[in-house]
Image (tube, rainbow, N blue to C red; front, side):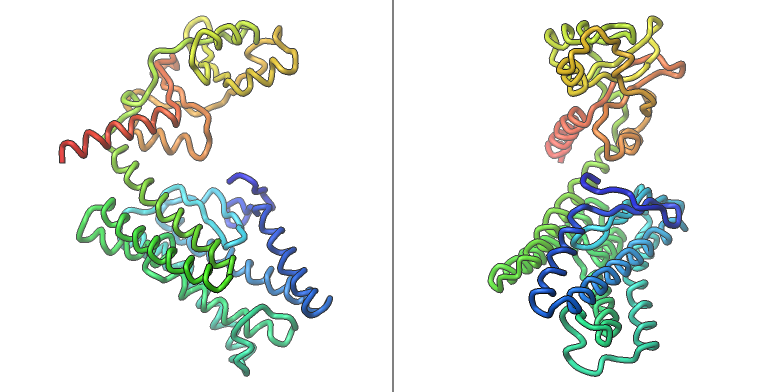
Amino acid sequence: MGWSFPIGRLFGSQLRVHVTFFLLLGVIGYAAFIEGGAAAALWTTVFVLLLFVCVIAHEFGHALMARRFGIRTPDVTLLPIGGLARLERMPEKPAQEIAVALAGPAVNVVIWAVLTLVFGAPEAPSDLVGLATNPQSLPAQLATLNLVLAVFNLLPAFPMDGGRVLRAALTMATDRVTATRIAASAGQVLAFMMGFVGLTSGNLMLVLIAFFIFTAAGAESSDVAMRQIARRLMARDAMITEYETLRPDDTIQTAANTLIRTTQHEFPVVDVNGFFQGFLTRAVLFEAMAQGTQVHRVADRMQTDLPTVKLLDGLETVLERMGDGIAPLAVVDETGHLLGYITRENIGELMVVANARRDRAV
């Protein structure tokens, strides 16, 4: 995820923090300082950090349960509005998806129960709301907020965990795309209601959360629909077959001349025998020219060690190999000869065409 950086590894997954998290921490700490002084700022900051430790524990609940079903979690990212465990894929068996979805809130319930048993139940209503500004109220408020997190995440609307439970339950009676669309629509309705409350009450954080829920619900619905179409397609259906290539020994100037006479944004690089070597992108080419390195070789600037796919690989495999990157993907034969290449842009175009054909067929 952009604007995030790694801070270590935990249970086999990379732990990342988004830079805006520190902005949120600074704003909350400053507000507490203005209202209650240095001590309040200190304990409020400690409270927020502990709360986000609980958020991380929630995300690793998902990750560790997913691992039981053979699904890796490359990274967990801490965001200003919570956490995000990026699973390789969601399990498509309803029972497995429900187990993965419920594992996160279950962690929060366990934390709430442990804190309540150790420190006791809240003694005053003030211990149930707001941010802790002293060590006495911190355990009770942390316990309460963990319970709130569990309940909020169980709302039956995407992208909350309850939305995934709803989707899994609906797939027992309908197809996955329809089930996702229903759960995503519920999420967007909830987001609209939250946004309205946030705007009328002046709560900008609630508006931000509503915006995140609305966009995440729509994105999930689109992604599932796209993957459903992708199951019927192969790499050969998406690959570009008319293009110009470069050689590793070509100069940057030669590449620039090729750029002028084509509309390509990336150029496959092959050796004299047609074996795939890498890609030279337009952005890298412009950078090299700006640095006055036109006589340098393409081999010095091209991207190498990129994943490849075979002609008959499914489009789902292509999407998995691409991951979150924007680099093109080469299609090669069994010996490594280049047959074509695939970009995210032409996958998107293929999806539009395939979706239109499906709608006409229906």
